[in-house]
Length: 209
Image (tube, rainbow, N blue to C red):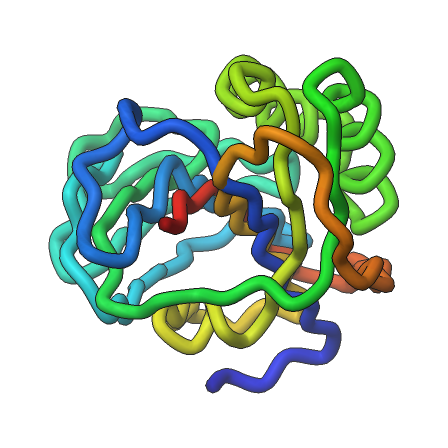
């Protein structure tokens, strides 16, 4: 695993509907997007070592992405010379995940919960708003969701190789399943992410049976 000056890897785990993804035995990693924020404009190569099958990428993943990145996050893909806001991928993993601690969130409380927790963890308003716009309608289909944040259990099977190396990286992966009624679970203590120098941020979601 690459060494970074400041690294925080998180997976947001809840459990919800199946219609979004063609799922493997272990569920699917849905809509992970990768933001790149260099301190100055430079060319960056990103590779994903994924224990599973990639089902969709944008721009097209050809053994990696090579982009010109600006400090504001604007990316120009060198393969097609088009501009992108982030790098997108989806896939079916070969690895299962388990939840031992987290939060039980009622449907009507989901928006406030996501805003509070994602901001606390370290997403910017732009990043957590894009996250919420995509995932809120899905989570609110369930009366309750069990939600937790995982770390290395996600990043160990979806490793990023980035050249040049970032100074700080935050990876937020959401995985979800509905609850018909609240359950008892140990509350999770969350850590805050500090952006240092060249920063990389990823968020996405995963459905787990």
